[in-house]
Image 1 (cartoon, rainbow, N blue to C red):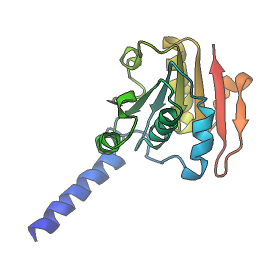
Image 2 (cartoon, helix red, strand yellow; image 1 turned 180 degrees about the vertical axis):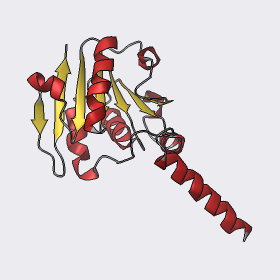
Image 3 (spheres, helix red, strand yellow; image 1 turned 120 degrees about the vertical axis):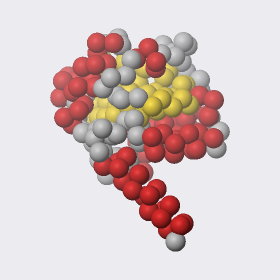
Image 4 (spheres, one colour; image 1 turned 90 degrees about the vertical axis):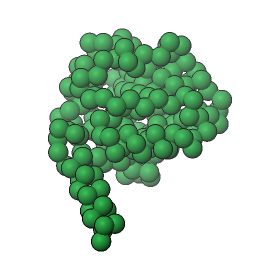
Length: 184
């Protein structure tokens, strides 16, 4: 009976962490695995690049991209940012067993309030941001990025970024499209 009660409390805590906007204003929807290869290819991994997943969820994109960089012997930094403590814990556990764990950083922060100096990587000469967030939040995040960073790329899964339309390149996915942008 005690074990049942403990499990019930754990399930309740997890539901609260996923259901209330204070803990996670953007609902957790993982990137579709059927499109993962296209997403990772769209990141155009190269040496001295930092890939930042804002709203990383369980980190699926970061871990898949870090695996590709490891296999290709690329010097790429990866940063997964999320606010949900359950998803952060999942990413820390995943990182423990990842072959490229030394190049993966996990940051618990709000993607709307984050200080981008926390994301700075000393040897990085190019930043790529991966976003799979609701379209009404995309513009808010992009405006914040444009104020803080010069010359970066944005990869948006499923939703186009209207303000970046002039540099848009679309990759047709198996499930959803991948929208690629360069911001100067």
